[in-house]
Every structure is written in structure tokens, then in C-alpha cells.
Amino acid sequence: METPSTSLILDRETKASERPGDHKDELRLWLRMLTCSTLIETEIRNRLREEFKTTLPRFDLMAQLDKSVVGMTVGEVSQRLMVSNGNVTAVVAGLVTDGLVDKRSAPQDRRVQILTLTAPGRKAFRAMAERHEDWIAELFAGLDQPAIAQLFRLLGETKTSLHRAIAERIGEAARGDA
Amino acid sequence: METPSTSLILDRETKASERPGDHKDELRLWLRMLTCSTLIETEIRNRLREEFKTTLPRFDLMAQLDKSVVGMTVGEVSQRLMVSNGNVTAVVAGLVTDGLVDKRSAPQDRRVQILTLTAPGRKAFRAMAERHEDWIAELFAGLDQPAIAQLFRLLGETKTSLHRAIAERIGEAARGDA
DNA sequence: CAAAAACATTTTAGGCTTAAAATAATATCC
DNA sequence: GGATATTATTTTAAGCCTAAAATGTTTTTG
Image 1 (cartoon, rainbow over the protein chains, first blue to last red):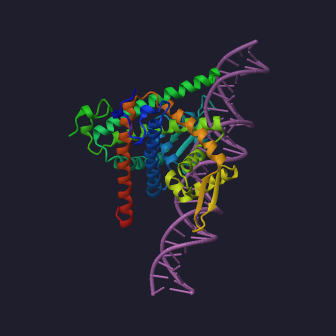
Image 2: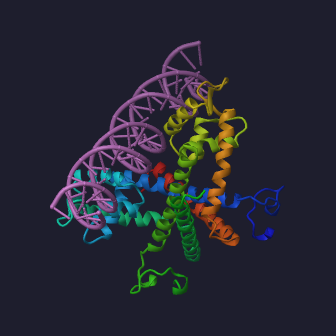
Image 3: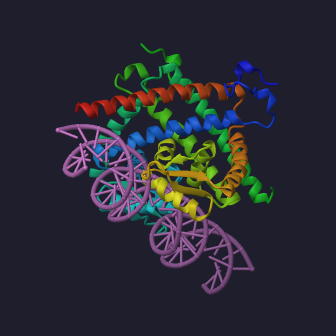
């Protein structure tokens, strides 16, 4: 049985222990996390547009390429960014047009496209990345160092939980359960 | 001075105390939060499509209307969902076509459009909401109750920090600083 | 080795999303 | 009371995003 002291405050009339199939705490947690993510994303989008006349998808894509020395394939980028292949194709097209990204098919496997930052692309990204890091620090300025560390740890646990729940469901579908 | 024990593990060669203007911890925290949000969102999107042949924007919009007894204006919904007015207009159009939402201009102020769920809309939403709550609970199943409570609290602090940082910047812009 | 399967990417069709301009209605201010 | 400002919403133009089908390439298999 759950103790009231560890339960989130939900409703003055109702105790969590009285509602057996209730999962309102998880729902509230998710909504709060979504609010935080949306606030940060919107703010970063606005600043990227105002200061650099660019978009978050472009920035994110360039960030992936910046981390790689030898370049990345379309598939690798799409997996890292958790977006569809077709989306990467489209965003890359814009970046290639603007001379920020280079795209060439791999010599040993002509199915694969290797994406790399051009020299101007890398330079532009580094300038943006520096500002980006400052913006994020500003946004989290109200949290002290232990709070940041603890939040980071709890989100790590969350990530593990999510991966497991999602993997289980994929397993079910493959076996034809449910 | 920061103590190494409370610092996130970053890099074997470098201690946080040696890098003065560094904000890598905040950046890592943000990326981890974004990963969690994206994993949840994608999963919920997939399940809504598979089980109910609908989309997350539609579900979110109906969720707002379900909470209101008297209906909501386009502006209220757009503020709550943190999306543009034009976006609400577009999503509502689809829901009206499908008979799930009713839209009528307010009698005392004909600029305002009052949105309400229709009876079928409310019924359809309630069925989806029940499943949605279960899905979220499943996804967070790896966290025990104290972890959920603590994460909720820390995200509350985060929200406060974000609101303040964003408000400060809007203030600067209005005064012409920066 | 040729047919079939697997793979990487692109294309397509459609919905979401935004910022900015346009429209329409109400409120404010001489 | 009529010009002006404000407010609420819609429209527009452009980019993001996805799932599913199509294309072109490589690998596997009989």
C-alpha cells in the first residue's frame, strides 16, 4: 500500500490508495516533462531564428555531423536524431544547397550516402553551438549543481524504463500477442 | 568551488573545476530530457495511430476541451497547448469535419470562436484517454513511486527556472537591451 | 550465376507547424 | 460618434515530419 507521504498531491478529496487502477501520477509527470521540453525547444527555435536565421532541425543535423570525423550515412543520422529517413533527405537537401553539408555516395557501396560538414558548415556550426550551450545554461540557471545531477540520473532511469517498455511491445507485436 | 562528488561524469581527462565557462552538464541534461520526451511522444503517436487511427495533435486538442465544461476559445487552446493560433484553426477544422468538435462564434463577442466536444467527440476521447493513461504508466513502469515523485518535483523546479529565464529575455527585448 | 531477399535512400501524399500578413470585430479616445 | 487602436481568428507561404511505396544497389540462396 502506498503511503500518503510519498504520493504526489493530487486532489484534496481523494487518496491514491483509494484508486487501485489509477496512474494519474505518471500522467502528470509526463505532462510536466512535455511542458519543460516544449518550453526549451520553442525558446531555442526562436533564438536560432533570430540570431542565426536557421532552424532547429538544421542545427540538430549539423550537430550530429560535427561529432563525426569521417562523416555519417543518412541512416545513421536518422537513427541518432530519431526522425525518419525521408526527413533527413529533405533537411540535408537544404543544407547542401546552402553549401554547409557535403553529400557523396560511398565508393564501396553505392547505396550509401556519406554526409559531412563542409569547412563553412563546420565553422557556422561551431559558432552556433557555443551560443546554444550558453542558452541552455541560462535556461537551467535556476537549478543548482546537485539538482542537475539528480535530474540527470532520474532521466537516465526513465530512459531505461522507456526502452524496456517499447522493446517489450515490439516483441509482443512480432509474436502476434495482444 | 564544485566538489567532484556532485559533478556528473564527463570526461576522464578533465575535471569540471578546470573549465570555468563550461556548461556541458546542462547540455547533457537537456539532451537526455529531449530523448525521453521524443521516445514517449513517438510511442504515443504510434499507438494512437494503430489503435484509434488518430494523431497526437488531435488527441491533445480534445484533451483540453474535455477538461472544460463551457468550452474554450481558439486562443485559450493555443495557449494551453503552446502552439500557434493558426495551428489550432487547422486541427480544429479536421475535428469539426469528423463531427468530434463543435465550433460557434460567441454571441456577445463575434470575434471569439467557442470550441466544445460533441457527444461523440467526448465519448471517443474518454475511450482514448483511458488507454493513454495506461500507456504512460507502462512507459514509466521502471520507476518506483519515490523516483516519480522526485522527478516530478525536480521538473517543477526546472519549469520555474525556464519561465524565469524566458521572461527575463522577453524583458530585455522589450527594453531594447542585449 | 540468376532469382530472390535484404538494404539504403528517395519520392510521394498528406498532415502538422510556424511567422507574418490579412480579415473582421470590439474597444478606446478625442 | 467616428477615427484609431486593440483583439481574435484565419489565411498564406514555407518548412518539417511521417508512413508507405518506389528506386536502385548489394547480398544471399538455390
